[in-house]
Amino acid sequence: MKILVTGSKGQLGQAVVEQLKTKKQYEIYSFGKDDFDITNETMVNNIITSVKPDWILHCAAYTNVEAAEDEGKELNWEINVVGSANIAKLAKANGAKLIYISTDYVFDGTNDKHYEVEDSTNPINEYGRAKLAGEKEVLQHCPNAYIIRTSWVFGENGHNFVYTMLKLSKKMDKLKVVNDQYGRPTYAPDLAAFMIYLVDNNSISPGIYHFSNENECTWYEFATEILKDKNVVVEPCTSDEFPQKAARPKHSVLSLEKVKSVGFEIPTWQNALSRFLQNVEQY
Image 1 (tube, one colour):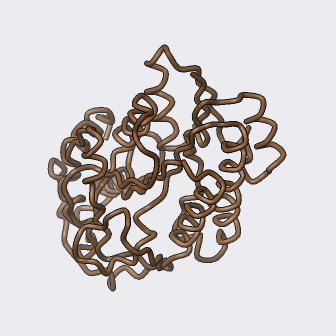
Image 2 (cartoon, rainbow, N blue to C red):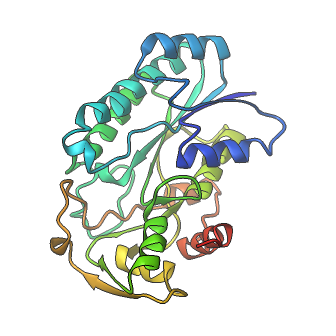
């Protein structure tokens, strides 16, 4: 079986490729942004038509939430909407199954319960608007696609909140972290494992899924756990004390029930963080 991975040099893409390589039954075709410009429809057509993959795991994305508000707004749209539409069109034309990665930022965060897959969307920043538009393009051109919304992703490869906290703890003896935004951290290798689970069990129905690690927290609570063995004081603060260009949902906790219903066991974020920290002991 042939599997094509986009964004293979990114945080999630690297985790996907690493796990796929352990499975001998799959022939892997992985592409980073330097050798696969998903916004170029001709290039997308040439590569997908040449490979003729059975599955496309679409990990490529523009993820700079702050820059998407202004200087990165056009690129955000080109990659997350136009690029995803190109991938979906060619997936459909070549009979490939498609997994598209989306975000909790498609929601406005006003729901104090867990967001279900069928709940109304209402993004409040440019990144969320582009990812939602990408979802719609994918489903328009490839109705049997799998869409996985995720949140607060961290992994060994790439920039993320965990690395930021670890680096700051080396320079400062006190940190303030927002305590009024709630969500679920997601360990990239665990998300990759669920994606490959869908491939391994290809009788699972397509549609929208929400995936993150089990348990919820605030950024402050997440930071406290990250730095519990470090000589640094972590203090809670409000979002108003750290104004940002992009508005963030206050409560974007995703319901994991649909993922659980297809038999996938989800580790807690505390367990995931422990595994991550063991892999980056230099910090």
